[in-house]
Amino acid sequence: MNPTTVWIAIGLTVVGCYLVKLLGLLVPAETLERPVVRRLAALMPVALLAALTAQQTFSAQGSLVIDARAAGVAAAAVALVLRAPFLVVVGAAVAVTAGVRALGG
Image (cartoon, rainbow, N blue to C red; front, side, top):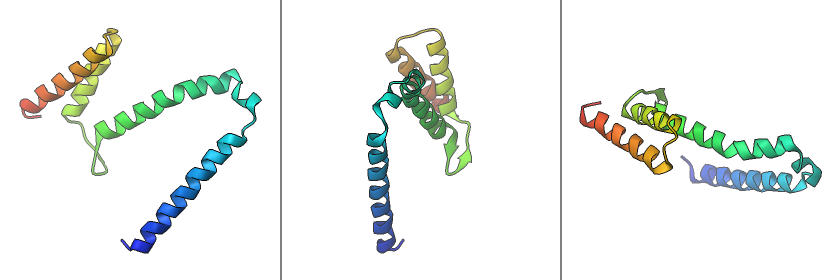
């Protein structure tokens, strides 16, 4: 990749981030106080984390993959349904993923 192209991409990213930040500052305060906007803002981090988890769990080199990571996510989901504490959820996911990998998965 050409170094000039990289710097152009970095510059465009910087300008884009600044414009998004500026756009956020220009939103009227009464718009941000609406109940719908508040609910969406509260749910956005959860949705982004779920999307990131799904992408990291079920893809490898641009293709769909079902492997030990999927078993770990399933174990974490079961622990969440059972209302286990966060550390137990993470521990279950790690243990199941490691177990499946140890068994050759």
